[in-house]
Length: 280
Image (cartoon, rainbow, N blue to C red; front, side, top):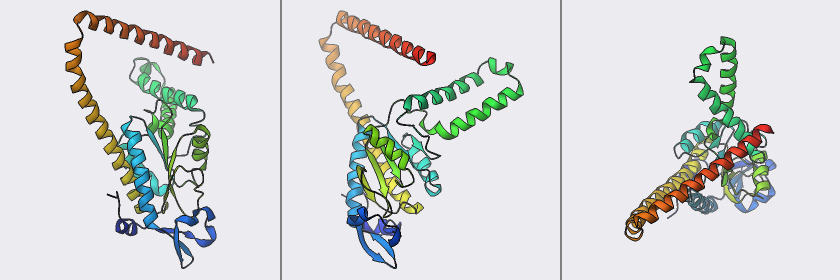
């Protein structure tokens, strides 16, 4: 069953493209007709593309990986923040920080700095600082929060990007393509669909259109997360009794010791990596 229908798309104005003189010829396959100098998007194709994108995004969420949503245009910011935060996915609604993907370690350092400021503000050392120092640090924290607050939980590169308006977010698209990260996007008639892995031909300017498409995507993510939780709970129920029957107590203790040893080794490696970063 399709995740949306023709009437809902029509009511949301998803079919309205741009003026004919602004069109991108590569969008021709998704254009139904021209009316009063404006291109009309073929909503039947949009329905198919929405389903393809939603199914793919659902599988990514089910695998436990993250999808980064990018929408810095004014009419999309609040919609993205509200819907995407509801499924615990990272998003960028302010200016795209150049090198966010291609120079990801630097971005992570900035996020860690923001978290360290939070930690310091709760520590006794905060009281020793002067009012001027506190003000400067608070302003720095606010700036970092505005730019990076929504991606503070993103500890590694995202598995995919979802973009509203590829023309405006061309730097994000370029970085994703360079790293081989799949791109899902709402693509209007004035935009370039080449290089976009999952094209959703749609009006990327109207807030109702953006809201409808994003609602379908976040619902698909929620489905994936729910299925992942059910499978993990089921696997836990199936495997736990078997382990108790088959493994004697001595084997359990030996396995636990081995796991702790591996974790300690990993912690040492991570500490060494952090020391190297600090020296650099």
